[in-house]
Image 1 (cartoon, one colour):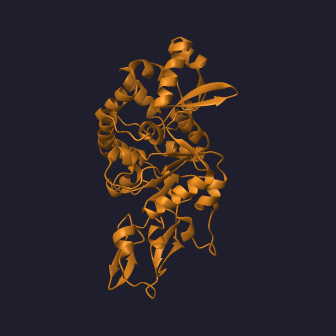
Image 2 (cartoon, rainbow, N blue to C red):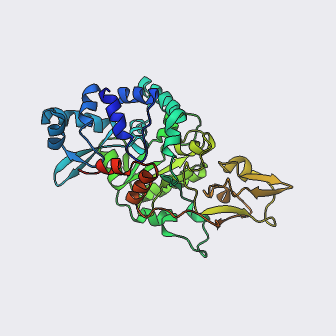
Image 3 (tube, helix red, strand yellow):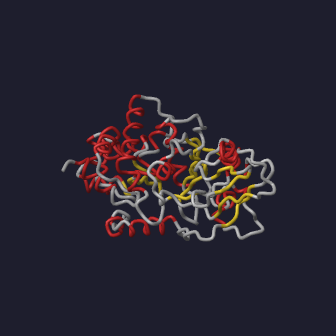
Length: 360
């Protein structure tokens, strides 16, 4: 077994997974030099110091630092400064090794090749693996102005409330639309927060923005018909993607791979007032990303089983015939990112192996 396969096996212990595939083997060989993957074998999913990594892999500290910096600048390992010392950690396949190298916009032969390989890998193995647990890793978060605040609205469903918890904001190119390039939807709409945003900004993979600029980005995304998705937890935003069904890795898990656990739908679904609906068809033809709406006898009908609760249809209805109402049942959202990860690892049968890689 060579170092690349050893490294893949380590990545596969993460809840996101990294199933074996010829496409992924080539991806790793494009992104990591043999010298870099040698050093990566001494990392875990929490930061380790250069001294610790050097001791594990038997490489000089200066050389480990050089290789770690090279990988961090490419966005294929994570780095964080704590108490004056920089630590380095592994990144999962998603979000991480897939997205970050594309966040500057791609456009090179290497990026073109990686885009094709990631598409092949998604269809062949990664798409099913990423969504291979009862608890999804991502969730849809509805457009805030579509929610009826006279009803019970939970804090983690309100984007402005979640933004209040963030201290740093980053804006990058959407890796999915850069790599797949199947539509002309906006690309500069990928938002990250706090530690992740600071890392990406530091490595020139994102630009630092303000809270107000983040809100403006979300408005642009909504106008373009993009779906807000984020990590499936209640505590904080790690990322906030704005997704299309033709390029997005997460949404394609449902639309192309037909996996019902590809992501968690929001706790809301669209409902149409037959008295107010004019049957114009805008919601069906231009806004619903899931084909959940059909105009029958001049009235829009919503298939609740297909509706993901994004709110895009509601914002486009001139007669205000569409409203968002709570679903009859929605699985509980994990309280924290940590709880979500441990739950998914348990459901995939690799909790102990994952925990081993969460120790410094």
